[in-house]
Image 1 (cartoon, helix red, strand yellow):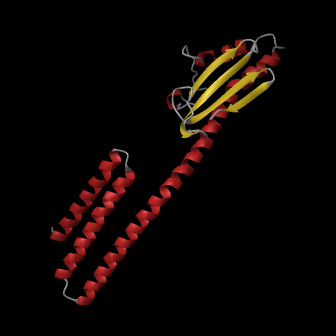
Image 2: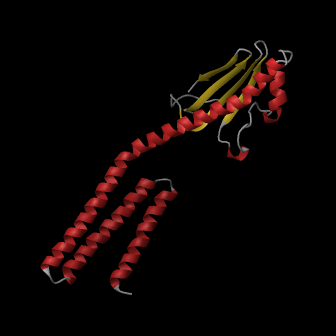
Image 3: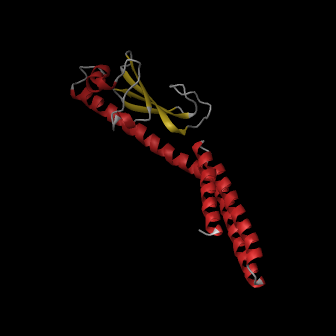
Amino acid sequence: MSKEIRSLIITCIVASVFFLIPLYFERPWLGVLMALIVAVAYMVNLNEWAKKEVESGASKKVIGSILGIMILVQVAFFINDFRKKDFQLTLLLEIREKIERGIILAEVQRSFIPVLENYYSRNEEDSIEEIAREFLGDKFQDDGTMLAVIGKQEDDEFTRYYRFDKPSDAFVITTVGSVAPGFDPLFENRNGETGKIQVVATLTKEGIVYERQN
């Protein structure tokens, strides 16, 4: 194996290590920067080797120009991507917020609609609480939380709280999102977290009312 091939292999290994270590600590951009520094150092070293080993002055200039362009292109791509990272993160969080809000509304409707339908089909003889416990009793936990009614429980990332207001015969579900931020980053969520989406949905005999608290 030639010296140049060994040098290339070693550079690839070092660049991979320099990238993976920050990535392990959830610092991907630092990893990319470290890998870029290793790559640039390798190309600079390669240019120095070309100056010593290549006899033709024209060939030296061509090699130097190509390596210089490669370095500039890589640095430019890194700077451009790094400047876009905040925009990309914001865009991803906005998409996530729409997804979480849609899941919350779907869960609430799946919980409330059968209760409301049976409430009127029984000519209001049973209370909303009685019907809710009949249909959703297996979802209610002793600590006041509520399991998901859609999908698998192990995939559920939301926290739900249920309660009944006997005077108004209301069924209330408070749902806290998992990742996407709400309006106020300092908002204290029901589950003790801060700044997440929180929606309160209330079912009465008049229908369903949604309140986006954050």
